[in-house]
Length: 165
Picture 1 (cartoon, rainbow, N blue to C red):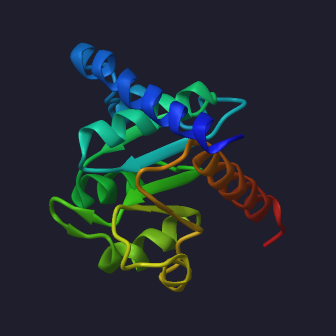
Picture 2 (cartoon, rainbow, N blue to C red):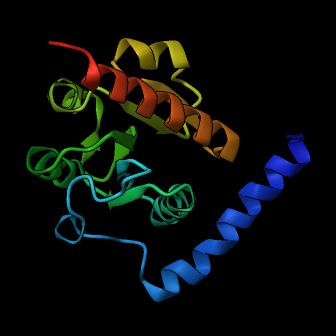
């Protein structure tokens, strides 16, 4: 895919936010989704405090047949990971109630596949791996990068779950 096409996809995704946010249909509560309800896709928790970014991620992931739940705080993420199983977590590093890094040990105990999303150029992908992230994506995120990272993380998670313990 050419750079021009990738930029077009990003622009189209951001334009789609307007309809989504106006209709307020992008935020799903944990109670609305039963565990494993998406047979072909994965159940993904999005932890992102920027509404537009969360909406775009949800729309793109749902278009790939994944179930998504979006929250905007570490506190909400903590509550959900203790009450529901996710195939993948995609999280911003800096949220309204703090930095995600101190929460990583607890998160990794319950969820081994976590993709970091950041607008910061101070953290490189190698640093992300040291903190336990499966992948690190920089904003603005190209759809092809998101798709590739999500597929690899889900495949890894399913292989880990299938392995004898």
